[in-house]
Amino acid sequence: MRVGVPEYQAREMTNAFEVFALGRLGSTLSDVVERVTGRPAQTLASFLRHNRALLRAQAVPLVAVLPASGKLGVSCLRALEGSAAVRVRAICRDASKVDAIASAFPGLESCKCADMMDPEALDAALADVDYAFVATPSTELRVALGLNAVNACSKTQVSHVVFVSALAAPGSDVDAEYIAMEKTLEACEIGFTVIQCGLLAESVAALAVDGATLYGLQGARASGVCIRDVGRAAAQVLAQPWLFEGAKLAITGPEAAEWEDVAYALGLALRREMHAKELPANELAAVVEAHCGSRVVASAFVAQAQACGEPSPTLGHLVVDPAHWRKAFADADL
Image 1 (cartoon, rainbow, N blue to C red):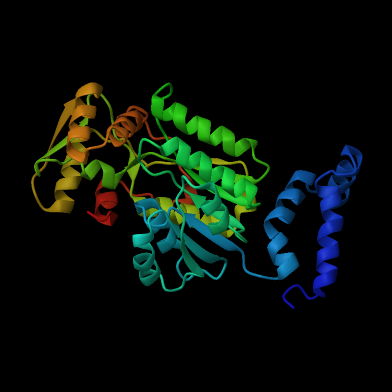
Image 2: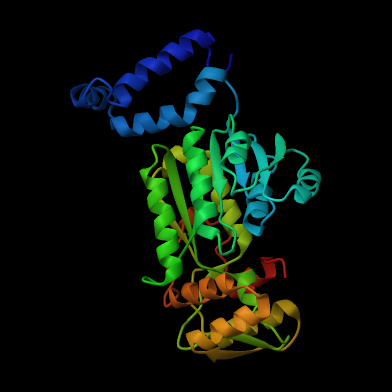
């Protein structure tokens, strides 16, 4: 027995502590808990909620990665691969991706398919899951997909959600969309951590549309990280989510560089000469949309570039590789 007591005793201990920690008998007893234990009752509530699976079933927590076949999902799967702290279930939106993900990550507990527009499919895929990593695909349905995933996590009693958001310019449509999803998550009675991403090196590199020119936002500076860092940060939160409950963690690079400096760094990574061309927001959006064929991606890139005047606070010890642009491009899958 991992905890050294019979399972029925562990279950009763959990039930007893929940009464106090969750304040079910009133605030007075919650105050008693804090005085006796030296820890706030809410902290105990968080610990019990996240460890319910361990105490009752003595099992390693099960983490769901959704959607698993996107770049952010794959980065999280890579970071969790081989972890002894959690078991991992990959959930793909597209049934055709299931075999590829299962083959790429043979250590998965399972690999399932669930249409994020189908609440029943999401509920089934999230059954028995303790923690979840949720990213939103870059489509016109981004908000609906994100809200469906959050609501499904709440309905299936997932203990903690790590939700990938964006550092976007205040007042932009992108900022408003992610605020709406974050508020829905906060209103659910589950633990959560929000990871707010700055510009990703892979997204910036994609703007080298003609092989020699990097398009950037006029008058702005650029700060960013590679996708791998986002996955690693999420994996560390998922290993001990109670330490980050309710936190909003911003991941950016350690410096904000001129676009010409970013182009130089990208040129070194690609082994060719690169130069920057700065455009006003509307023209940059048109270039990005024409290149990638997505208005959503274009608006998100511009909104994130507008938010990068200076680096936001980073995760510090959580950013595994807080690299400058040259290192970020070297680490990126270009």
